Amino acid sequence: MDAQSYEAFRASLRRLALERIEPHAAAYDREQRFPEESLEAFKEMGLVSLAFSEENGGQGGDVVSQAIALEELGRVCATSSLVLMVIWAGLGPVAKHGSQKLRAEVIRPAMAGNTVASICLTEPAGGSNLFGLKTRAEKTGNEWVLNGQKRFITHATRSDWYTVLARTGEKALGLFSVHKDDPGISFGNREVKMGIRGSPTADVILDNCRIPEHRAVGDSNKGYHYISDSLTWTRVLIAAQALGIAQGALDQAVKYTSEREQFGETLSRFQMIRGKIADMATGIEAGRALLYRAAGSIDNGESEARALASMAKLFCSDTAMRVTTDAVQLHGGAGYLADFPVERMMRDAKITQIYEGVNEIQRLIIAKHVYG
Image (cartoon, rainbow, N blue to C red; front, side):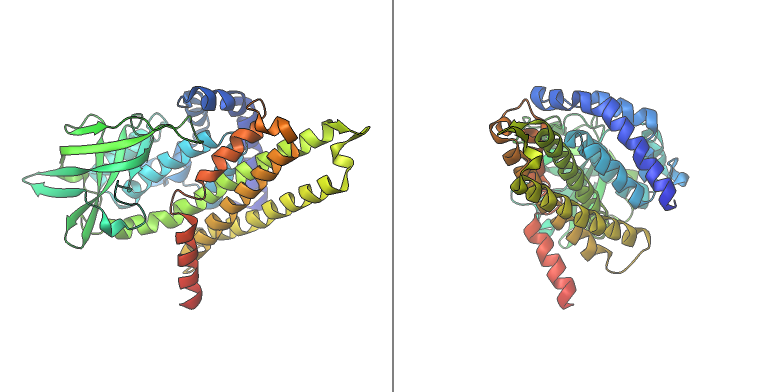
């Protein structure tokens, strides 16, 4: 796409977000229900297929266009943005590395927009140390048998497909496609969370879960490589979600301070308020420049893409936390009420500093690149 096409795409996403997503955002959070209305809107616009190649039945959209989509959705509803992102994250490694048979079974049907997917990495004993995972996959005849427990799995209980990272040898990991109806898969209780409440999170339990041998994604000993590659991509997507949350909070703060009066003037006329708004806007614009630099580096296959993705995830999520906190402050007492979106946005922003690798890990990745 050229710049004009990107802006037209952004405008279409903005309309979708305002007309189809924002009216339900507060209810998703309050009622802790999956955003089925958003999923239907994604289906009508073909957004699920955006992140997949034409060979797999998708649109072949680049990472820049994917980031635009998640930013605009996150601007009004972080839960809806997450739903789309995790479907992409769950299906992405299968689309890239899976056999033709596996892609025909999992990816092509998903392009219609009805499929929900999860990525299963974290375990009860830890998340950042992937080589420390205990879930195992053993080959038995023409089947794989999986045993283990995955924790904090987004969309667990709602997803149709689960992409599971499991140990296949002493120092080898593999990825496997597990369907919700496969024998031996079950789910823990749904977690009660601070934010992103419309997206269900629960343990995925694999107890002698048997799947056909073709459900191994690519080489069953290269799962770590596949996931490392995927995380570079998804960290940029999380950065886009975070930036969208920040922009949405700024939108709300500008609206509130332009309408609220104190001492005979709107809050927007006070210098301290204007200074705060200026800092928020500057942080967001700086994050946007870094985000799309990182997205472009993936599209162009640049060697520094991994470090840039970590920089974008770190900076945009920290910016989202800072901007949403400031937006609540600018609302005064009203900002502490669930009547105003900034309260939800501040809670939603926090997770962007944690999932897809906590920001402390991102700093280590960045520092290794700088010293390397």
